[in-house]
Image (tube, rainbow, N blue to C red; front, side):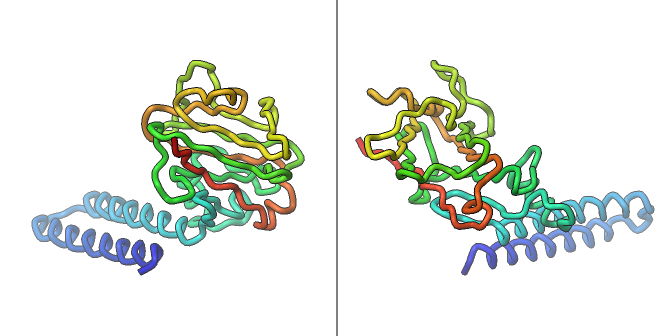
Length: 223
């Protein structure tokens, strides 16, 4: 069973539960008022709307190498469900794709949850950094999407961070709780526990807008 089918069945189950609960409540309110009906309808509609938006987000999301994105967020004329899906997936301001594209992940490329107990690396091959006409950034957040205090006061890295490339032109970013030996210039400090990552590309290139660019996976580094 696919994830989409699971969410559809879950939504139907939620709808049945809401319906049964509503009938049960109504059965104990023979003299219910318009106000109670409106409140109950609002609660039921809100619950179903939330789960419907969740399902729609998962249907429309593109997942590659553990990263999740939605193409078309911020485009004028988007329907209510798509706007809700974008808001759930990417909290905060959302620009049109030509201005910015966003990816997020809480998992490594193998599907395991990101946790500061492990060391990770993201490898961009030569010429493989996010194509753009402005800049890109990789931002760290804890499980609640908050900045993580760290000894070097670094909360993101970007093409303006002075990242040191490898001899072949590739770039490695080290994502871990303690500084990597001889690679602190390319270190994005992680918390001790769970965390999430955001990749933002501003004025993205044609490869990004066309869906051809694939963000490299987060790989756990085995000691």
